[in-house]
Amino acid sequence: MLMSWKFCSSSIKKRSSAKDIMAGNDYDQEAPGHLMGQDNGNPSWKLSLPHVCVATITSFLFGYHIGVVNEPLESISLDLGFGGNTLAEGLVVSMCLGGAFIGCLFSGWIADGIGRRRAFQLSVLPMIIGASLSATSTSLGMMLFGRFLVGTGMGLGPPVASLYVTEVSPPFVRGTYGSFIQIATCLGIIGALLIGIPVKEVGGWWRVCFWVSVVPAALLALCMEFCAESPHWLFKRGRLVEAEVEFERLLGASHVKSAISELSRSDKGDDVDTVRFSDLLCGRHFRVVFIGTTLFALQQLSGINAVFYFSSTVFRRAGVPSDFANIFVGLSNLSGSIIAMLLMDKLGRKALLLGSFIGMAMAMCLQAVAASVHVLGSGALYLSVGGMLLKQSCLPSIMAMSSI
Image (cartoon, rainbow, N blue to C red):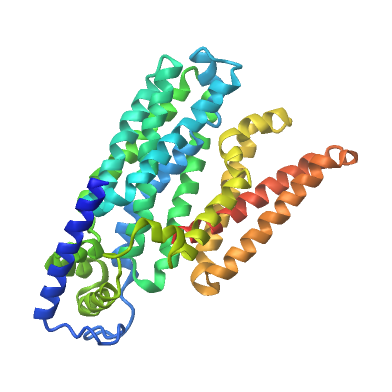
C-alpha cells in the first residue's frame, strides 16, 4: 500500500510539472488532433513497428511456457520420479499460472514506477532463472520452483506489453498491432510444440526445451535497450522533452506537436488523482472492468487451457498421433489470430467478439454431441477434434480484443 501511495504521489507531482511545461510552450492544446504540422496524413506505421515487435517477444515467451510441458510431460515425470502421479503432473503444469497470478498483481505498479522498458527487462529475470532451474532440475520440488519463477515473469510481461503497444502505436493501426500480441503467443505455443517433438526419441530432450526459452528472453532484455520508452509514461512523469523525442522516433517529426497536444487534452480529463481502487469495483469504471474481466473469464471457462497443456495426452489416448495433431492445434490458433488482425480495424471489436463467441459456442456443441452420442462410432472422434480446432481458431479474437 505504501509503495502504491508513493508511486501515486510521485505521479501527481510529475504530472503537474508536465502541465506547467505545457503552459509555457506554444502547443495549441485546443487544436484538433488531426493537425500535424506539414503533414495532414496518418503517421507512418513503419516507425513504431520494430518497437512493437520487440515488445511482443514477451507474449511469445508466454505462449512458449504454456506449451513447453505439453509433449515432454510424460518424460519429465519419468525422469524426476513421479511417473503416473497425476497430481504432481498437474502441479508442474499449473505452477507457472500460480506465479503468473502473483506477477500480474504487481505489473501495473512496476510499469508505472520504473517505466515500460525497465518493466520488460525486469520480467525477463525470473523467466531466465526459472527456465534454468527447470532445465537442470533433479527433483519435483526444483521443477516446481522453476516453473513458479517463470510464471511471475509471465504475469508481469504480457500486461505491460498490452499497455506499451497501445501507447506507442499510431491510432489507425492500434487494433492491428494489438493482434500481434496474440499472434506472438500462438507462435510461442507452436514453437514449444515443435521443439517438443523429438522428446520420445532423444533422452533428456525436455531439458533442451527449457533451455531454448532463455534465448528469446535474453534477446528481449537486450533489444529493449534500443526501444523507445512510452511517451505517455514520460509525459506523466513530467519529462516532456523526452516524450517529444520518443514521439519523433515513433511517429515522425511532423506529428510530434499534435501527439503532445492530444496527450495533454487526454491528461486534462484524467481523473486518476481521485480514482480509488474501490471505484473499479462499484464506481463509474465498474462496467468497463466487468466486461474486460468477464471476457477473459469466459474464454478460460471454455476449457481451452486443457488443450494447451494436455493435448498430447488426450490425442494419444484417442489414438491420434500427438505430434501431428498438436501442429494442427497450433496452426488453427495462429490462423484465428491472423484473421482477427486483418478484420479488427475494419469490422470493429464488437462484431468480431460476437462472431468469435458464436463460433466457440458451436465448437462446444460439436464436442458435446461427440461425447454424448455413442452411435457415431469413429465419427465422434473427428467431430470432437473438429470442435476443438474450431474453438482454437475462435479464441484468439477474444483474447486479442479483450487486451486492447
